[in-house]
Length: 464
Image 1: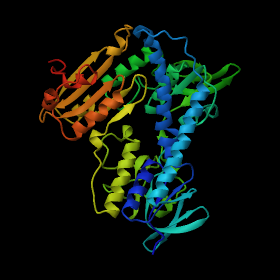
Image 2: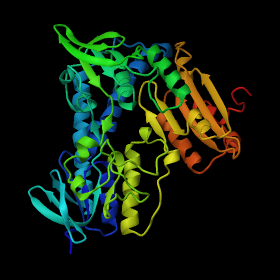
Image 3: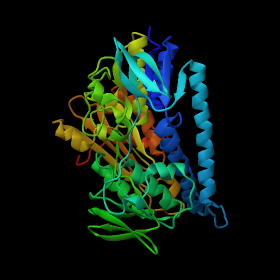
Image 4: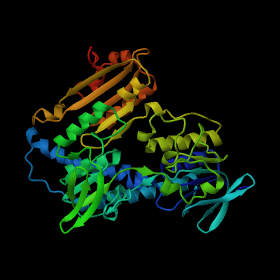
């Protein structure tokens, strides 16, 4: 008999979710993690980022407070105190993850696991100087920042550094890359008072998102003081007596810190696990090919989360390498293997948010993707000033947009730029997963006064 029914390589969100669910159904489960339980999201991603987002949000509140009758002295930020408080909370959460696994009866092994081969139907896994056997293996090692090869790249930092280390606040920050991570961190630092510039190759940030969302978010970010340098290819990074200089095709950009957020790949994480010698199929980025059940080309070996290519699943995988996706996939694997309960992840109505200032959120298809599918769509859109900004006569604007399939009347895309976007789109994701139609949106009584009510009061299509 094998030592374990399931051996999980990677103690991030997907691996932990699968392990706990499998153990709850009586499976003997072990998890190997060479870093800290919690993975990218908890340790160096979503959670520390959101804590810093909260810290930056106070800057906007201080700015509008006077219009609401509050006289405040000049607020002062202690950046390093914020970073230390952030890290203290991450340590607490790591302890909670350890306790959860112990309570679930999952064996946690500290170390990097590799698959040494097979003995009959079982996998042989080497970890912490010993070998164990497992009937099945789940790979959930996520992805890691990838830095391009160019002169001076050793002078830059990645998001892992920014969200894990305690360092003095830079006066000037250059962020190369304008996806989720780059835009969020750039926006946070800008509101915290750092002179921040984003260097991007395209004309707008957030490739893959709806064009109206991209355009309006870029405008709002720049209104708040963030600088965007579009159509600029980064050539090298130079160190000078006065800091760092990022040389681009559109001229130099100076900073005290340079953050590269040009993408994350599975390759650094999947390399060295013994997958190649087993014949596991992978793409050029190191993501493991999986079928509808998340099983790889090697029977009994599964993969979920960012290290999987989500083959046959995500309609827009480039913006759906998300923690909740990894959790959902991990639970699907556990339910199918150990509870005879196969089910699927609802990828097409997965909500997602960009925790910039202001926030942005989206569910479903962009207008462009819907038309590319050949769908006949109606588009509803509104832009307005949030009530919070009326007394201070602020310039911030909220954008809301719906994409509706004419044939079925279903709302197939929902997009927003503005405060609390993340909280708002989560609720509408339930409606869209249930197949809500535009008529049902229209029949819903509005909650007034709120920003969210605008999603159920847009009656006239654009151009209608």
